[in-house]
Length: 296
Image: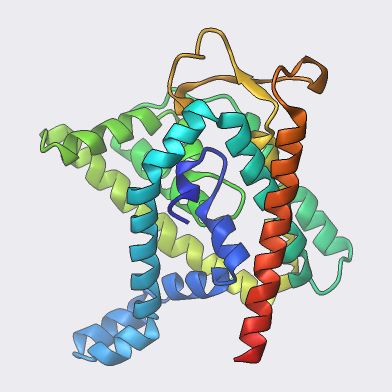
């Protein structure tokens, strides 16, 4: 999940869904509530740990942090120097995961089809929406954090990309880098604090909604999540190249344009092979995991 969050257009929620612990994650987050606070106020530490599934959240958080710290440099290098091939791998991973996740929908009736199409429409609209030039006012930062964190736990939508749409991505990453190097200002600290509060609010509120939907409308909700994943693959289409004005910039700053297969100067066979291989790998890993779970 940590490695996936470093790739534009890829959500850590997609990886959680592929690996089969998405609903457990949403359930654990949604239990950070008044019941947990009551248990803590009464000194019921063990009960609180079990209620919120703390060991799972701690292990997952440690894994995400490890992925970000150890793989971020590699992912940035790949995106800067091997972007088509990297996009092809993730394109195949998402296609393979869609093949797996479709089995979570018991039947495809009108509600599920409508939910899937709605998910596709939302993901495509977000993918092709022009980036904004957001102000750094505190209410706007709170809203940006609330929406972006929701995107991060939704399969198919990149939270970093949502921040780009709000026009605050570069400003917020700059503030975080300054904080890491102990360059503080009162304004910067207040902006980071409000943004973090927005993230916390959005995460806790949206996780409750997702938890309820998965409990009461699992098939329709999964269909919508599949739609989000389908709609997001457009941002990972390998046949893209940066504009001449942005080609020398880092990957996250490039403006990409689609290229037809006839005009592609690289190896189409390599990209197709990477897509197929990564999709097959996801399906095989899922089958091995399922058999191991059945055997145990």
